[in-house]
Each structure stands twice: as C-alpha cells, then as structure tokens.
Length: 322
Image 1: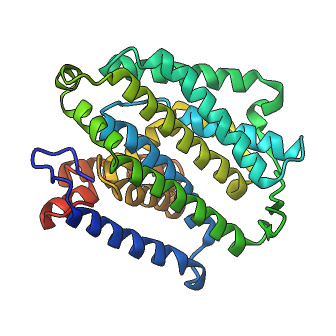
Image 2: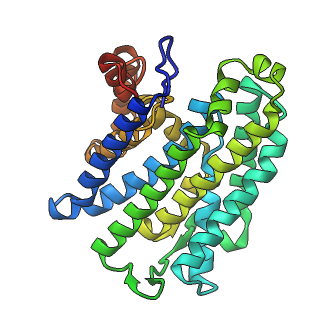
Image 3: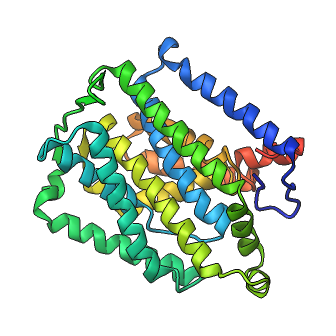
C-alpha cells in the first residue's frame, strides 16, 4: 500500500492490481526455490523473518506505532510451540495453534498496558515488557534457561506431510508465509486499514470524526503480535530449537532494521529487508565479530542512499504502490 512519504499514492484498483501481480510473481519465484539449488534453510529462515517484519510493519507502517518489543511475540510462540511438541507430544498443527494463541494472549495483555501511551512512551513500554519476558523465560524451568529447548521433533503435519523432509518443510513454511502475508494485505486494504492509516496521519482528526482510536490501535497491535507469534511457531520447525535469542531486545532491533531497509509502510519492503539482513548474516558469518560493523555500515549507507527504503525508492521512482 502507500508508503509514509510526502507524496503517498491513493488506493485505486490499479494500485491493487499492481500489488497482486507482484504478489503472484513473488509466490512463483519462491515456489521454484527448491529447483534452483539454493540452500533451503536460508530461504525458510528468511521467510519466517519476512513474515515477522510484515507483522511489525502493519503496526508502525500503517498504524504509526513503534514497538521495540516484538521479539517477545516471536520468542513466546516459539517456546510454547517447542514445549508442546517435545514435552506434551502435540502434533505440528496443534503446536502452531498453541504457540500462536500464546502470542495472541500476550498481545492482548501487553496491548492493554502499552496502548494507553503514544510515541516514545509507547515504544519504551513495549521494550520494558519485552525485557521483563526475557528475564521470566531466563528463569522459567520449561525454557531450560540459556540452553533453550533443543531437538524439537518436526513430526507429520495433519498426519500426512513429513516435515523432516526439507522440501516438504519448505513448502509448508512458504504456505504459512503466504497465508500471513495475504492476511496482512487484506487488513491494510480493508475499511479497518483505511481508518488505521487515518489515525497514523492525523489522530486528533480521526477522533473528531467519531473513531475510537485506542480500540483500533489495540486491534492492530493484537493482530500484529499474533502474526508475529505465528512466524515464531513456524521458525521452530526450521531451527528445531527455541532459545533466549528470539526474546532478546536485539531481535526487536533486527526487526526494525529489516523494515527500514526494505521500506517502511510498503507491502513488499519488509520481505526484501528481511532477505537482505538474513543474507548478510548468512554469507558474512566468516568475518566473525566484524559482521555487526559491516551491517552497521550497510545500514547507514541504505539510510543515506535510500531514504524510503529499497522498495520505497523503487515505488517512488516508478510512481507505483509496492
């Protein structure tokens, strides 16, 4: 949809058509990945983080709410799904539902607390809540502390699809990503999404028109947290572990970075940003501790060169909604 720029594009049938065409192209390219010889683990990991970044973008790009605590939804869903699979013997589909439901419940509780504040105060409250959850999970017995939950069984999805096979797992992750992406796409192109964008642009005016803005923002926060949790549940099957890394504040920082690099307030920007960041982590790992420095330099270069993000600049140049 529209990017957060001074010359945003209006929603028209043409813009929706452009976005749907690009979605079909994206889905087709991702569907043929197993045939290209590309390392599937890298793409599956990138898809999970792409969905996570899209969920975060729904909140900040369209609702104007900056959250520094989205890692708590990723980590909570991951821990819940991992524990349910390994200890309770849940099937994969039930494990995903359990983890996603846990993230949704957490989003309701934290949303009621955080949504009362705006701007930097909202961001700081979400960061504080996320760090609180981090220390809870550090001490909780079922998370196994710094060791995390390891050796998670992948099992059979719906009793049919063997997730231990890389190709099967890849298409399951891809289906989950496309489902979450379409859910976000439908949300931002609905009447609810239009009200959300009006709140982002001018909340006092939205209030004067009779909209209960706090309720809209709370629903957006819960939806964003739930989809982020869904991404966390899917990630468990890829990494086969759940660790404190997914709950730490640095993970929330990476989510912000992915969204900014790809394009804040664009539909496909977070996807591109996630692939860029995960690719750097994957292929620059040989540089050891210098990876962080290199990422910082690249991020600064992107901010100076692509003020709207990669997809945001492309959309601006071609006057298209991406």
